[in-house]
Length: 440
Image (cartoon, rainbow, N blue to C red; front, side, top):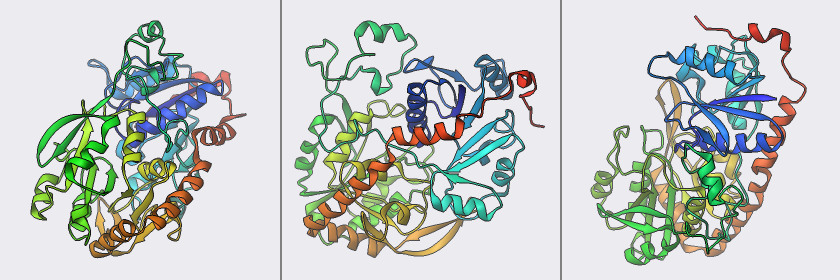
């Protein structure tokens, strides 16, 4: 089949881009032809898969997307994005369309529901059971397909890798250059390769930045003088992640003097509602809070480097008010890290009843962006992190259970589920000229 995916560009930082990477790779291995239309900055290919722009300087987004669909001879469209943010623009232009959407709060916005009720949509899939329940309460027929992780990358026995390898989704406009370098076939273990080098990331300690090789992250722990690393991975955009509450909770840990909080995120950005440096200063923990990001913040770090980061953490913690899924939870579980997360959104679903981590009660629900979201209890969050600091036995037990549970969500299993959806649903070729439906 010719499958077209509409999502963030594969080389961007969002969870959507990570999901499109895993899905597109898997569908290609299954024998499908895949084309991607990317929302953000676009390059010519990803692993040999054509990546097309959503808009060009002289063409509207709607016209460009129609052109992309026709050029790729699309049989099925998969939209991996928040449908309600692009209502009546791209999602209702083609049939058959499948939506794979997050639900990031209770009380889905009316325009999202209208979008998902479009006549062109063949199927709606949520990232989680709680998302399915929310959509079904609004009259949307929905199934669940969890996102996945690559078990060869996210492992508790990380291996060294080549910075320029194609499996790091290196940006390029000429796939032949990588082919000449041998990167298309390389497993990432050629120490004799002239391109082999250690990837680096920016680490910010006390508002001072330095570049650190990703395979020497333990030196950051030693520099801070910490026996215990509380890790967090997520974007500092808007207010939903509640990173400021995680910092406050860390400041209330009884064992914070022997611990550090490592936030893999930008301390502040144009899209951020909160300057996290100021929050750390407010709670007098600037010497115990570390920030990190890629050398180029737009591109981030490779998945291999992210795996090293997860392994360097002792636990993974979040104070988020709601998650449509929680990719960092799944990935850090895959390497055996115990979790701390609020008892709202997908937290209970991913962690279970304190089976793979500790669930933290919420104080109340607040309304934001038409959605109801949970506000975590800060004292309980601090207590949970202290509990895991004290008990390595508990950390290991919860981490081991999470590692075993995560195995059911590898990308090969996710793609197999998508193949079940797609196989046998080829579009009648005589109706190709009538498949485009430009929304009014």
